[in-house]
Structure formats: C-alpha cells, structure tokens
Length: 450
Image (cartoon, rainbow, N blue to C red):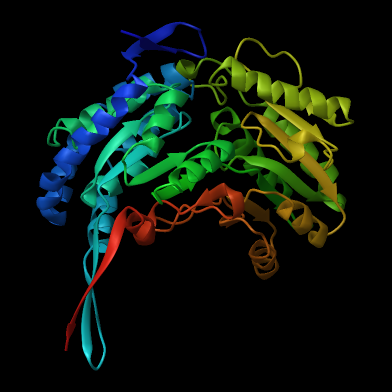
C-alpha cells in the first residue's frame, strides 16, 4: 500500500505516515458518504448539533498533544499550535450560532405564508490547507455536518496527520461514514472535485481555486473558495509609528508569514517612512527563530518548495533595486531569516504575487490617495489594514479599499460572528457568521395561502 510520509520541516525527520487513498477509490468513498447522509439528516438540526458538541471534551483533553503534532508537522511555534488546538474545544458559540442560523424563517404577506428552510445539500467535499491544519477543517466541517451533510475531507498532503487527528476526534462521536478522510495530493483533490459530491469547500491557491470552479461548472456544484491574498497595510502621516511598525512585524512574520492575511505590502507616507522603517527593522531584529518546539517567534517554512519560492522573490527584488533593511541572508534549510525590504516597485514580482513567507515589503508613497491606488492594484482582496490616529479619516481611507476585511489600527479579522470574506479573486463565497454557515445548505421555500 502506498503511504504518504509527513516530515518535520525544522528537522527533516519523519513525523509519521498515512495510507494514500487511491484516486480510483474516491467515487466509492463518496457513495459511502451519500449512503450515510439521509440517516444523519434525519437526526434533525438539534440532534446533530448536540452530537457534535460531545467532541468538545475530547478536543480539550488532546489540545496539548494536537499542538505538539501541529508544530512537528508544519513548524509553527508550539504556543501558537496549542492555541489553535485549544480553539477546537471552544465550539459552543459556533454550534449555537449555526443552530440559530439554520432555523426556518417565516415570511408572510397579506395572501401567502412562506417558510424558508435551510436544508442539507448532500455530500460536501472539503479540501483544506496546511498552514492552519486543524482550525481550517473545522471552519468547513462543522457547519457542513450541522446542516445535515456528510463530508469527505482531504487534508493537505503536507499535514495529513493533523487532518486525521482532527477527524478522529469527531468520528468518536459521529455515526459511521458521516465524516470520511481521504489522503493524497493533487490526484485525490481532483478526484473529489470530479466526483458526485454536491459541494466543494476549498482553501488554497488562486490557481487551484480557478481549476475547481471550472470543474464544478460541469454539474454546477456549490463552491466556497478562500484563495489567499496579497494584503496591503497603509500607514498614514498621523499614525502611531511604533504601534504600526510593531503590528507590521507581527503580522508579516507570524507563522513564518504563512498566513493568508499576512501583511505583504506596506505603503508608508514619505514624511514618516524613515521612522517607520527604523522601528520595523528594530522589532523584526528582536524576533527569535528556530524549531517550533522551542517556542521561537518565527519557525521554518513548511517545505523546501515554499522556501525556494520566497527566496526567489527576494533575490529578484534585490536584483531589481530593492534595499535589504534586515535579513536577506543567513538562511538555512527551511528557515528564512525575517527579512525587511524597502524600495519595492510595481514591476517586481514580490509586489503582486503572493509570497507566503517572512518578508515585509515597504513602499514609500506621497499621499493617502496614492497609497489607496497602490493597495487596490491587485487581483486579490482578502484583508487590509490602515493605521492612523484620526479615526474618521482612517476609517474613510479603509472604506476605499477593495478587500473583504479591513482593520483600522488592528488586524483585519472581525468580531466573533462576522464573516471571513475575501473580495475579487481572494474568494468565492465565505466562511463563518450566520450567512457563512448557510452556504453549506440548500434554501427551500414552502408556501401556503394565509
């Protein structure tokens, strides 16, 4: 039997392995999930939610072990990994929100009474990423299951052990075949998309997302796609430079920059650029790097391919005239030294193509209008950030950005209960929030005369 080995990116050692699911077996896997779906849906919304809720204590008991596995398999610092694992147990609000969102709605007029139901679609194929290898599956699997769908889950081939560990907990409380895991890489992902599933939920690259949309169009499958970003940060003239620089360092280098809402493009007004660059360099230079098990600030890249992509972008930018303010050398194995570049121009690949690595890129601008134009000059539109002390003006600048989520003096992610949503080519559909949960359902309207 073919197996998929998982390697620790910090040490190169094998963490474990899982059996690869032959792509030819995927139709049979989907058929099993479909056979289990009607009985699962028949439990009713409240019954399904309460059954899923039983996983809470198991996730809590295994949080530390799951965190250690996450660090060993993809490299993020242990504290961050345990935090991600711990969040899996905090499902009460999420399940309550889903249960409320999927309740039938009654709409009446003078002649008719309609009930709007949010029913299961059938079988959902969930294809999940490696950078948040347990929380991202939860974003897809929980609302899909609660809505009455069964799920075929394919974790990233970079983090199969984490995906399996997540599913194993749920499968301790779920009926058989309600959640089935398949392992593999591109062939397995393509087989799921081409199979008889009713929906594809995917987080990953824009190019793969486009492929999924093309394939899904043949049978008009439902799709929810989160496709990354090239997130801008604007630092206005009246910004608190120290706070802005500290945020830029943390958000550019967290998880070694392997975060979809990492700050990848920083536009700073000329008048404060010297101070900002100095402060950013100071914060970045104090960040520690090493094996995630040692709890550094910055761990390794997930693999050599991702490392090579980032270094190629940095090298090309430097050759094209970018200035290295910090880092740029001393890299080893899968570790890239946190790097700060200045003098980034639109002609450089690093200005437009997603980097997904520990690189902060600074561009000086002459006005807020120029910053907005440059920030919006992208195919992407996931997150964005604006720093400034005049609240009204800063918010006005933020409203002119084309991203789906914009933070004002803060990260772009919204309050609990808000959507995780991208604009432009950063997404199709969205996760989280009552409206996000409903995307895993089929709306049906039953009407009688009043």
